[in-house]
Image (cartoon, rainbow, N blue to C red; front, side, top):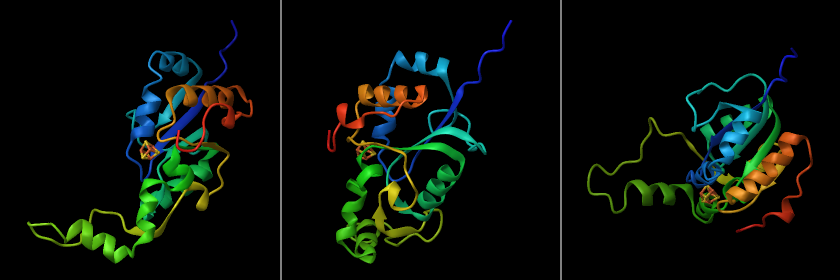
Length: 181
Ligand code: SF4
């Protein structure tokens, strides 16, 4: 009896995003069962495994690069993932998180932590990763292989493009989605 081929490994992470792109991923619904027959999700907020393996076939990043933690994780994904996918408008363009690029970082911090705060207004210095400025899309800090725009991209779009990537095909992204979809 022949040994089955090893499954492709997939890792996902959300950086500065709202998790909506991961929710759209979960909207694959019953297709998730088909997916897990083809791939093993080795690292993700959706699974228990919380250590990124040294080598991963496909990495998927949601969200923009807004903090030192985001930057570190994006670099680690690029280093360890053979194919890196930017999932959703925040990853692809900066989108909502990048709106703060119109303001000084000090103004943003004041607005969030001092203004309109009644209890202990203060800017945190511990437990919150240091913010970077400007906010950048993922490809602003590492090379990206596949872009999936949309806020969020639909489950159908994710399924179509992921199926192509898993099969080793070059996805025709413009045929299934567009920016702001
Ligand atoms: S692209 Fe839209 S859904 Fe995805 S993380 Fe950003 S705001 Fe949320």
